[in-house]
Length: 194
Image (tube, rainbow, N blue to C red; front, side, top):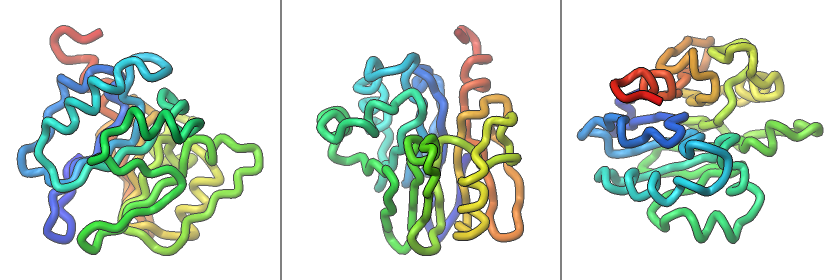
């Protein structure tokens, strides 16, 4: 999904599941946002190949948040540091600002926590999570605490994946535009799909 925002071309995607080489990133994209599930299985196999591919696309900024297939990155800061290239900003229950655009994340672990005490600090332009909010392009797999936090904090855009059949779809809310940026079904259905 390509966004024109504040003089930047921002390309957001998720759920390549090892098929990233089939994904076309527009040449004009200068910020790349990935909302996770880039490896074919569960674990670190394939992460090096993915990040090598990602960095082969010239961009000013690369932002990554883990999906349920990369939970190991949320469990060990040492693994995260060793596996992610320095050019990649890893968002994990954190925010980051670039050229007047704010990006934030609520991690998979926070969304899966039984305490479900999630809270974004301040208003932001792009909220990036892996799981969708409940009832919005979610295949019935969304998070109610996330939906409530989105309604409370009102980010301009909320990008997510996880629900493959709703990939490349959007929905307008009162204050937030929701985008499911999952690429899985599109990549799988290309010639030679798995």
